[in-house]
Length: 316
Image 1 (tube, rainbow, N blue to C red):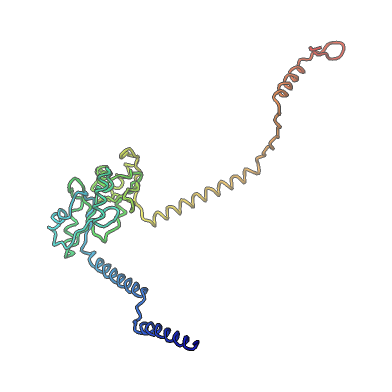
Image 2 (cartoon, rainbow, N blue to C red; image 1 turned 90 degrees about the vertical axis):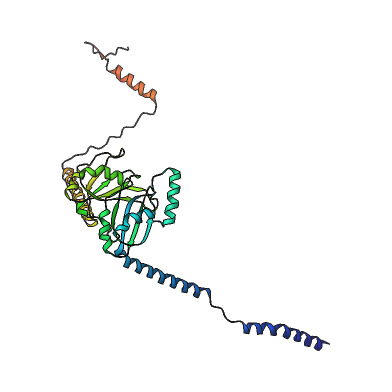
């Protein structure tokens, strides 16, 4: 009986295991997910490189249009600049540097809140030929809907330091147009760049004003201490980073030299100055003892000397 039971159990096990093993043999091995992710990342990197190359090649045909009112649309910019050549693309960016859709949503939100952070936006224009850029740059400083446009090439990022002034202690909500109105008496202004925070879009209280002539910078420096929106301005010449580093180094050297001179003078004076030791005076513990001591001292002074006999006190 035992042998029969063992045979039956063995047959059942064989029937159960056989199809399972056959199924495993037929299944094809799948590719791991890590390999798929790596392939996708490599493709994305290649796409980014291609986009960067295309932009680098097209940067010679692009211009930057700044200080544009947020109510202006792309069609209006196209109509304004199409006379200089055929336009391939026009897109807008805010001061924060977001995409076009995000800038529009932010402008609507800020309008509802009553803030003027995004009252001004920037545009980029791409032409088919680089020759049209030289013609379009003539629009720099032109009034468009009450604001002076700032038109420059995309590759030009730095100002001319020799003909620029640095203005600090400005209000955080200052605009380029307000600065233009304040310094327009100094001369022809080529460009104004307000230093903004890249996250909030608010100003950092500083700006650069570029003039067409170097003589205008001296006139702007003469306006140091003038008030703009109840703030006293600080105006100075614009300097490069290397020049600022040199000035900081010279200031630190001068301060170190002054400290050394002061230390030497103290050493010389210490040889001739005699310092008094502080006298330790123990304060009285009780107020009654202080009053009693004062009365006795006053009575001792009122002694009288007689001609004959010892000294007698008035109290006796």
